Image (tube, rainbow, N blue to C red; front, side, top):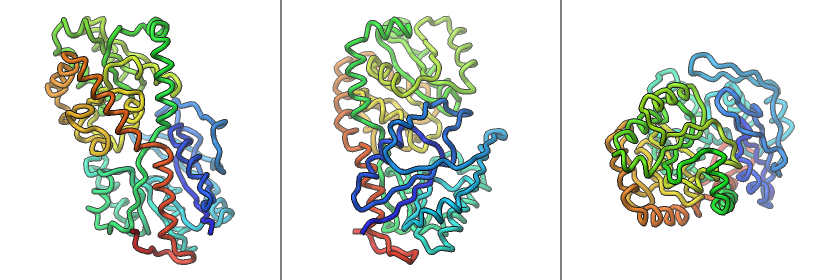
Length: 389
């Protein structure tokens, strides 16, 4: 029996397309994805790879604005879209949009099982804002099931009083094969890539939004604590854009250190070039629900240095195995980890190989299978669930 799946999510993110393509290939699933917006240029400049989409979808009319640090998105036509689809189950990405609440109300009215797709963790800094927590609790109490990307999110949902048989795991994934192949091509063209981007012969790499919450200044401080000899041997490259970029460039310049490069936003197909030539990815984030750049870097064979608050850590970064996990906002801990890699190139290679092994279990197909597992718990015509084996 085919199940009609409707997935509601914010934007056409490049890393979600392979997952939805894989989900659409399940013979007993009829997938339709409702995007609340095509993209969000206020945060990211991602290209929209429409030519890669192999699933049924629509983009709702939308109006977006940002007030302070808060993102407001309003949509038209969600109720009509849901009625037209007549779903057997709704999977809704997040609770923080008006459309999320509209979908929940629609599902309760029609007695359609409603699954919250959430990446929140117990260390998510957004939990410090009381109105958000109140809204989250109200929303969660009305959900029938929950879809999470990994261990940290699963533990958090359980801590809210949700029983384990209502939680499904869809491991967060990027197109591992695409990144691995692109990295191999980049290594064969290393000289030209270094010349184009003015990259050091060897370097540590940060990829992400250039904002303080990603730890960009912690990394700069930690790198500056390395000896001059180490810095001459290993540069530091930042890839990304954001509100902190100008300050980052000023601080790097003030350090009078020509081994630091700050590069702007880079599209998906160029990212692998940086991963391929780097020694390690360094992501000293203060709060991150997952951090898919870690998936990307591991697919390209990099070891990882990140913090204990990154949502992906328990799943992907095994301390002393494929990288190092340090405390958030600990510049000294970062310096120590950087020195470990600087002093031991064989350690870098060994941990990089382990990253490749670990990330093989985090493919779009594995993520899609997590989505698909929901179908075994659906009771048609009633918003309730059978226990999940």
